[in-house]
Image 1 (cartoon, rainbow, N blue to C red):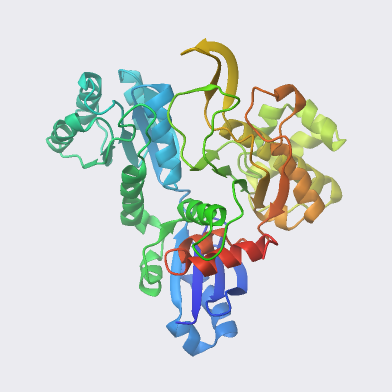
Image 2 (image 1 turned 90 degrees about the vertical axis):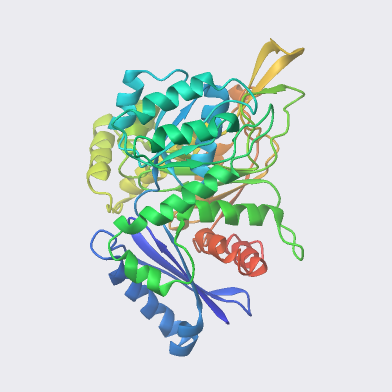
Length: 463
């Protein structure tokens, strides 16, 4: 096996990356308009034809073939926890880490209105969590009873106090509902254990990806399971940070993935205490992903404009509020829209800059002056202040030149007025994933981690 053919079925584009495993380099990186709503096999055939033109028929036949998909935007997950700061946050981390999308959350004792909100969210999975090992399980059992007797008919993953696990599963099964048992996500104070829940979510993704038309053809072509694209990016990102036994990684960094509907922020770093602050709330994972569904370049750009303020946004672009509002409306209606003038490109760049800045601040932790447990400083969330690099991926960054990309990404840097409160870095070196290679590297990691690392380093100019 000399080559790998790596595919990504997205909502807008289907991408193909071909890697020479002996030379440890990318020999093809291309994309075609997605056909996932008609037949994924149409775009697949275009990708395979492109691969054959580079590799040759025999090499393509013998190549390792793997695939990711984000065509459905990831599994829609509702998270029900006991507390906002602990089980709820851990549940969100597990959902995002598995490549899912959190569409509804609720905490504490569930009410009928909470239940109605979960039903209305059209979730595909319910993640039920809460309670330390050996702790009180009365409330989680009460919530499980309400959910099991409801009109909700989606798979449930229970990832709380294991002493209640069998009873919880029996409740759901007695009402004809699927219930999967994961390990407790927060078994004790300061401990985070999301891997078991993440694994179950990914398995459910595989069993339910059949809603992508033509998925049967894809499954026959590829050599492994179809992986959620964000999960592959998370795996690749951790590899780039840590490195392999034979080659070192680049160390802690952030990654910003700017899309049409969302902006995803990833961070790869240990969560160190900031200036001796007391860390409270759920433990933070080394490899963390957050998704901002109101921070996209197209479908959700109207939400971004509302967050920033039309006057502020227009002032940055040197345009009138009316001009900006009309431009944003055009983007929300036509997600395939391509900026066709200097003024329109300026708007795109401003959308991207704000998407990165706002999303990075939501991803980062905070520090406040308050007395807690013998300390005068309290840290909530992840401390990113010592990170020195940010990598950007997405068409807006690749297609507008290095200077524009750097300006966009540096919006993740700390502002003067935020010092000692928002835990972001003061200075960041900006790098760009020129070949959109992270999904491919994540797929390749399990088969050839040295090559996966090499192609990422080449794509960001760190070979």
